[in-house]
Image (cartoon, rainbow, N blue to C red; front, side, top):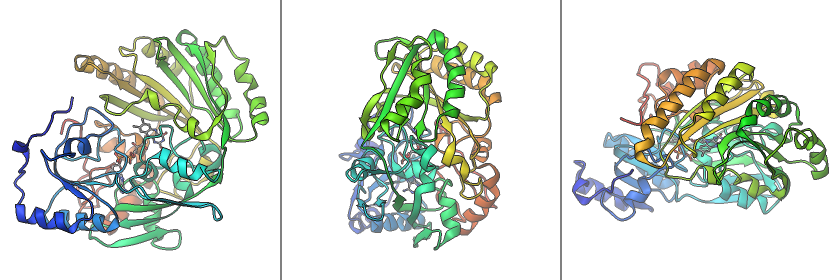
Length: 473
Ligand SMILES: Cc1cc2nc3c(=O)[nH]c(=O)nc-3n(C[C@H](O)[C@H](O)[C@H](O)COP(=O)(O)OP(=O)(O)OC[C@H]3O[C@@H](n4cnc5c(N)ncnc54)[C@H](O)[C@@H]3O)c2cc1C
């Protein structure tokens, strides 16, 4: 539960004149503890996170971002950078320090002729989809529509379109970025190409991106999407079916799966589908799924692409406390399925869920060292989110999640940059960058040698310790 911050907390030892000058230099607002809007601005998606920055700068544009970086560097303040505020570990808000809040930066410009879009870092997935879908276009984005494009893109970006069009970073054409020394650069394949390699999967390690330019593809506006629900006691057979079905359907079909409790309290397993090609063709590919087992409900049909993008929103509302773990599964062994289903049957909270997604097609045709994101083999993304409402239930839920992770981690390989939790330390961060880690360290040394940007999935420059903050820090 977040506590209200009062004016009594407000000083943090900052010199008033320096703060006033900084405030006057910004086009956006500067918020301080106790001031209007401060508590809303420091709240992030994960309700476990309750941190109080000394200052929150709500940036109006790139000029504000440059002011923030220069101010924090000269005042020796720790900085956190907020895009959509969705990081599981809550790394976009800091204790003391300056929170550089990009959420007011909402500009989007679509070029329907060249099929590109430029977006500022405060844009959420549903906002980008809204603008691009006006022209029947889209780029790969995640599965929950209030995620920020900024953090999602910098960590790779997995979504419904990835089988056909690759990760979000595979569709990134260029970025504008403010470095730790306040310089403003553009990075693309042709300009500062080493930096462009690093921002495609290297998280927020190298600077603050103030503009993303994406390649777009014709998508929708109507796609075939939804889910088929089965009772949880059929989960083992359903997962064995899912293992074959998800890997063997054409790459136009996104096929996540989820073990969850329905809103009316029924423990269930869902196979979700998003088919982006011609609808009749999609129906033909769905036949084996529609003929499998004894479902509780078949909720697949033609829907607007934007609705598919919001399909999972209600399951993960902002502000609840939660605990997450994630790994990649090169194989989905029977033994893994057995263990997983046994744990789900004992899940203490109806809000918790286990999720799978298939990584195949275009994602796997990019070399693992072509971008900083290394996980390019056909495999499944596996994660679970323990969520609860009553603070008294926190311990039992975290215990359940830790035990589930201990039992299933041996089946996994690696970790996703976008899915690191609050207690994932330096070893898991290294795992997330895999074989690209050494190259990222060298790049960090070049672009951020003091580790100014460290509240992220941190790559430390060669001569420094890796920073791995935790939720209890
Ligand atoms: C419910 C839910 C569903 C998700 N589903 C998916 C999914 O389907 N696919 C997927 O790939 N990921 C998914 N994610 C993970 C998500 O992509 C990451 O949490 C991502 O970091 C969120 O970005 P954000 O901008 O909202 O987060 P923030 O918390 O604002 O930022 C995350 C990190 O990025 C840094 N950062 C943010 N903006 C910038 C910037 N402009 N420049 C430099 N650094 C910056 C921050 O400092 C922080 O370290 C999901 C997360 C949640 C909570």
